[in-house]
Image (cartoon, rainbow, N blue to C red; front, side, top):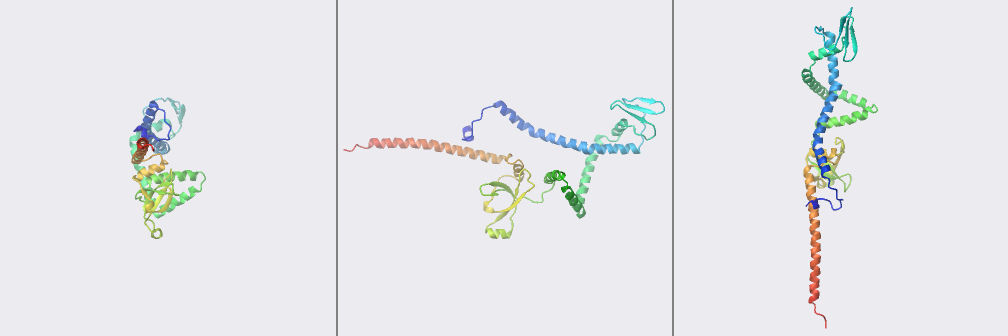
Length: 314
């Protein structure tokens, strides 16, 4: 049966069990590892670019408007009383001198405020709550007419900036596809011959198109969105005859994965169908070949028997 699975014109691959086992193990390990690495990278970006600057600003404000005399000498400092207070920071090799009241003490003040007020177990839930609240308020503001006008105006200005417009446009397409609710509801996935006969493309049925087109075609028609790879947020809307659309046994998400991966990720049920079709074709070809050989030999034997039975003419 294994001989039937392989293509007839495909070259025989060398048997490498170690390599196959390693690749199979990598195929199992890489998806979860890459997923975890992606989330870690995203969190590091948020922490470095957003959370830490907010913590630093909050620490400065607390140090500016509050007074907290330190009664215990911090580790790693030397205090010299000679008319002014001199503190040596052995961690960063810096010297801070306090000549007047309210002057900045530096490293130790930051550490004290962070340990007293800005603990991560308090800051992190508060940061997430404030972030969700701000996102909600911005969403409600954009839903209003004035907010939408301001957002559209700012996007127009960004689109006019060189280099920035390309990056912003690509990022906006990805975020809109992932975060924005789909306003177009897809009914099912079909395959149509597009852009010409002989080329099959995957599309999403969005409706039954227009009555005038249906009357001109003299049969039911469908409106189909033809997504583009690898960004299915863009595409073309075409109207095809219903009889020319082939319904596919895959879900909307599976079709999107197929488009995003440029055809690499094939749904499992379609892989089984392709494999069974390949096996069936090879079995049919083998049966036909063996049947033809047996038929030829039997016909030859019958011809010889008929020749032997014929009496020679006198």
